[in-house]
Length: 229
Image (cartoon, rainbow, N blue to C red; front, side, top):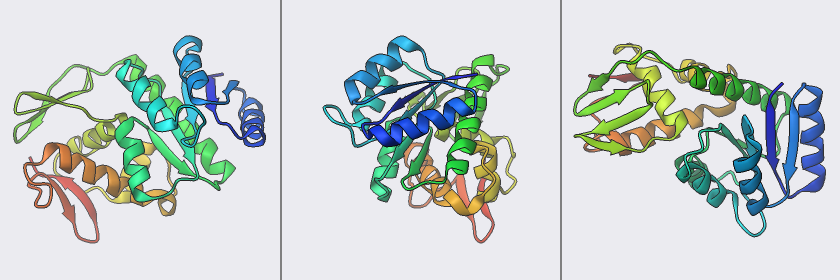
């Protein structure tokens, strides 16, 4: 059983989500606005946060930023009607681990919840200490830190996981479907392959000297992506 916090101002939707997750065996609590969600996330100690973006008083983007700036590493699943690419990018850049748009499939949502909970438990167990590098980028998996040219680079949790999925392939090509399954632990590649592309674009923006002409995080036409060390 895991502790899941739902931050959602639509009472009917929140109730439905709570009942569904409780049926799966989780302990669930609901906050109806941003400040209440932020306070509950800090004091209740959830293992997963399901967060709406369109909240009264304080929107979900601000909740995300405040949690991450405060050092919270809890997985956060954004659940929102805002489906513009700019909103998705901003959500991930603010610290979301996954992004699901309304209306959504309950089965898909539960699959993503299970994936995030597993990844959160894996993250808590720690990773054998080593340093990976390419170009002027250095990665420490144990501390989940990245530096470029000696300067720290802030990556969202999913950006880091995607980077490691590419690093660990040692130059081999990874398809979008493979990355979606490895990083998001979700096998239906028709649902969210755009998510992979958005994260790759963010990695290039943060780690490549010229994101428009990347030298390391490369696209392999009709195949996927690979990392060129």
